[in-house]
Image 1 (cartoon, rainbow, N blue to C red):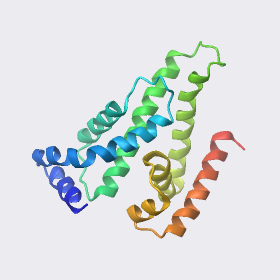
Image 2 (image 1 turned 90 degrees about the vertical axis):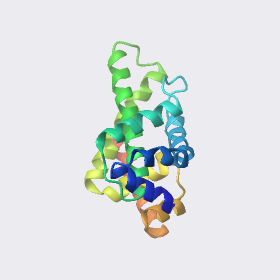
Image 3 (image 1 turned 180 degrees about the vertical axis):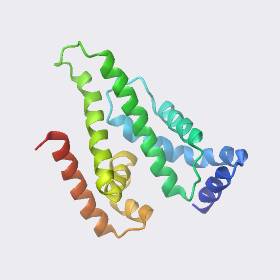
Amino acid sequence: MHEITDLLKAWSKGDTHALDRLMPLLDKELKKIARKYMRQERSDHILQTTALVHEALIRLIRENISWENRKQFYGFVAKRMRQVLVDYARRTQAKHVDLDESIPDEKRPREVLLLDEALTKLAGIDERKATIVECRFFIGLTLAETAELLGIGQSTIERDWRFARDWLKNEMTGK
């Protein structure tokens, strides 16, 4: 884990070779995160796991972020993956405005947009709860893994996770 953090910091300082050494160490985890995202998508989604990872990384590379640790990195990657899918959903929804509402696959982009709006709103209210949702729902971490990654007690993670799930459900359904 320290090796990843050291390489992230070196990459932040402009060491392009650090990125080359970092990618093999991150590849398995990044694909795991991307697969979790893609399970939430339509079965015929044009993006595949590797493409989602690459698109998210391209966005991160363009941002020139000063990396502190792997927790920060995985959090940013998860957000960028979500943004890639939201951007795709917006484009898809715009192309299919005139289609019959009864087509189940066409409802999926709307759900992605609703979740993104609700999660963005939650982050404005409580960033930690939004981060927990990203770790649990999008990255696929267990409660214990989320607690370890965020450096917070597991009972706090459990409480925040329950609250965030209920809050998002209410926000998305209007109930």
